[in-house]
Image 1 (tube, rainbow, N blue to C red):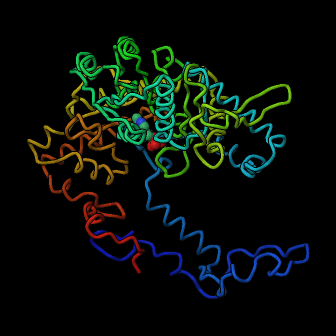
Image 2 (tube, rainbow, N blue to C red):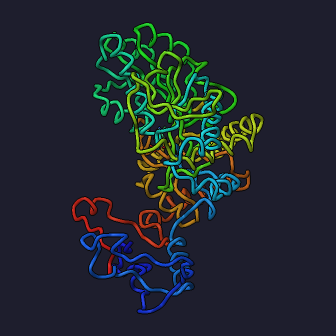
Image 3 (tube, rainbow, N blue to C red):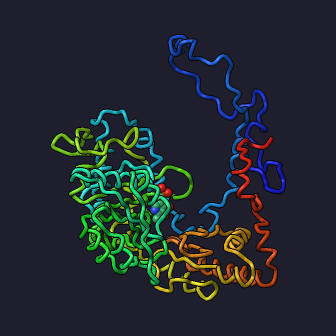
Length: 490
Ligand SMILES: Cc1ncc(COP(=O)(O)O)c(C=O)c1O
């Protein structure tokens, strides 16, 4: 990645370190006679020249990747209060389990007989997620939250279709994550937005006005992306069901209610969870995730195939499901992410899971109280796992925007909060401390924000030009669109 002021690469590509003949690893000599190449691969499929792979010794290789990783901010380096994206410190025991050769070398084509422990584990995870959400059955196939939404909406569509009419409209809250309207659109629904009221709840009058027998479902997250618990959830569920609609729970934020409240008990018919937020896999790292979907009994027959079934002969994958929405991916989900969730649940137990939500909510409220005297809090209520501040007054009075504050936080070693989301709060700073941070870290963050807001008064240029200490200065965010160049600078 090039510095925006300096086109020199910060760390050259690995090829720049390559010297002919250097080796970092010598594979052991084979103990069986090598087969002639022609027997393995016909000449027509073989390349004529060896690929130009980099040739580097081990220290050079290690240093290259360490230097690259140093360019990143990560949870091991510092606080990462990225609201709605939950970058928390996950227990390493789940990673250790996922690194065991007995699990990470399992091949999905192995016959079910040899996959029994893995299928048992997946089946137990489905059961546990069902218990935690109040849903009757789960699929672990979706590979991300967004794919979970897509899966569940497809199932809801199949449910209405079986009654003779798939219906036309999906209602989405105005505070919804962008994936909600996207999933609705991908399932051929027209999206109609339901407003929030002045307390940050669903505006019941607006909901009533938009409900009709054309509505297939209402997609909602509770707590919503303002970090607020929907106070009228039972009434919302009653209203949606009164027109035959389904209530869909975007469960990306389950860490706020884990072990305490269940979407099924609030009246939701279908949920997806982000295992890569709540259940032990890091979120936001670009790595694999999992967005399992749980449903109530009336939607169960539409679950993607295969499902995991058990009988006296053990566990098996059941493909014969005539009403299923079909298969979602090549195999059946991200096994190692599901495994981490299984470990996480067993490692913490119900009491530990409850403490996750207690601390997620306690930390968020503590930080909110520290910060609300510095920046405007548009919905001044007890929050759940996150809260949203607005820098609109600072912008108006001092010309310093949310982005400037966030960039300056980088200079102080903090990852910025989520910016400009949810869309209903101007100059939004969405802050989620997560359950894993200490009181000292939260106080240090508050102190730094106080310093930055002081700088906004005395030296606003500092904020406009920040960051100064990061490997990349402020980038021209539109340039990638106007002048796309994704080659590595020489
Ligand atoms: C509230 C909410 N819903 C849905 C999603 C989508 O999840 P994913 O990024 O795994 O597709 C997110 C992602 O962070 C989210 O915060």
